[in-house]
Image 1 (cartoon, helix red, strand yellow):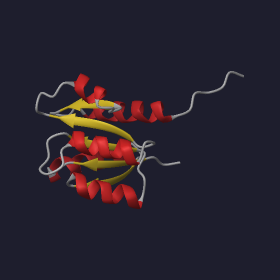
Image 2 (cartoon, rainbow, N blue to C red):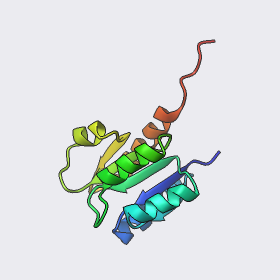
Image 3 (cartoon, rainbow, N blue to C red):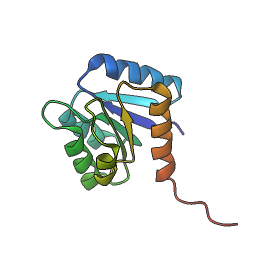
Length: 126
């Protein structure tokens, strides 16, 4: 089953590049340019992972993370930032991963795969 990633970033070039990368890794990709648009899309179709920038106009990534956790607890959220945000704050806030900008593409894929892995129920001992 194809897993869906919702990429949320107000930088359209970044969003396009991430969408292309994730599609090449066999993910289904949706894009949103801000937190409000992302929430509306999530209500329509739940993604497996939301990959969101922290710094955006209007609703920032932390607020989006809080709202997703409250309303859609099964959706994993990975934060990304160029602003020197601390990964520890992202994890304290409940993110399932953190990626620093400028993005290393391998790090993005690894963070998404780790978030997906954390969503799987543990295998029962046989």
